[in-house]
Length: 502
Ligand SMILES: Cc1cc2nc3c(=O)[nH]c(=O)nc-3n(C[C@H](O)[C@H](O)[C@H](O)COP(=O)(O)O)c2cc1C
Image 1 (cartoon, helix red, strand yellow):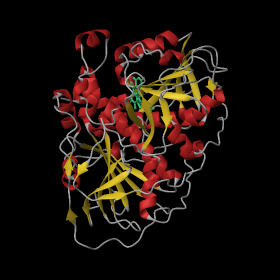
Image 2: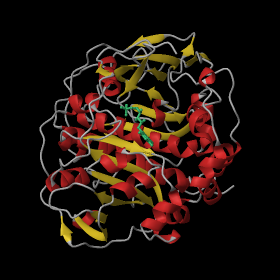
Image 3: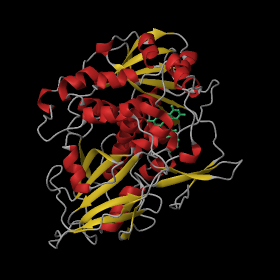
Image 4: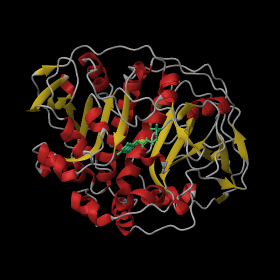
């Protein structure tokens, strides 16, 4: 199977949804928390310092600093502001409580697991760890010098993000691979921005020999490595690396549900996008993104002083937005768009594969209509005029939030150009980039007092028809909505890691 066949086969249409008739098997819902049992568990100190640098500055590339001088507190701070539990919700009818995290995830199913290798962190044993967000602790799967040359040689901290695709497939079936890739994009940026806010640089590697990484990290068979993220920089509290013997603890992975249902299309696309050590990274041949211009010049971006720590821990997906008349300003929109424009730091990010189309519903000074963003000139090109609220909701599988928002986005991914450069592996990269952009949209909206929601469900070809896109102009890979959220009485912010039983 090629990426094209998978993508075609997992498109939503009225007909495909009618045929699917998928019923959720609640008794078999996968546990959103992985544990490796029987290994040493290392505490990550509670209440790590809050990175107070304004969130918009971090999104614009400014680095913060950390007062932290030791490895455990550094890791605690990094993860508390990127992957930890940050709120809980209670279902009023049943009293059932569930956890929400700093990083968003389709259906709150959280397919992404964070593994990390450390070497020479002060007060923290060198080794290989798995982060357990349910306890905000690190499970030590091995101690000593694990080969760090996975990525760029000498980074003292290297994250390996894996996907447990079954968690998403339980709800979304064969389309779930797309959501797992988006989720990795969100998790990557959650980590990279948290690192930046505390003074570290990061570099992500999407091109690696999958099987060698599996041999090194030995995750449970249901976890697939997707992205490696190296951290380096002056804020890392480093010391001499451990020269002792490597000891492997491994641990017993918990079973996530009674039964795992096979999804052959997902197995096939994953196989197609896997890299053997003999493949080519393709970076030297990357074709650049098209450029253009538009008649609407974006004004200077609105500002916000809300701190990064507060913004990332308060971020929530809006369940719906207040319709009505209240609009957002063009300066707010400008700030939100500016937050997506900086280059990403990754081996596949030399050129952009995503272009943003906007459905402007209620933005001061912008006629309702559809616009294309030309980020290098900070200009919008109008491609349709008129009220788009019903259309945007309809295209997003009838979800009202896409019409009640102030602005809704279609992210158009140049899948052909990515495949031309990177082969089938490029399919992953386009979705990582979409998730990464989505993460910036979430945080910029929150910093400006607005709310946001990622939308993975849309009628693919209907979007192409509405935007008059032919296949070589790209395909829709992600929707997004930003506006004034309806209040959500069921959510409560939580600074305490929760022990959740599912
Ligand atoms: C890739 C992706 C796709 C999503 N798709 C939808 C969607 O179609 N409709 C929706 O209401 N929410 C969607 N969401 C929002 C999630 O439901 C939300 O992130 C999750 O419930 C966790 O809540 P939180 O973001 O407040 O932490 C999506 C989120 C992501 C990351």
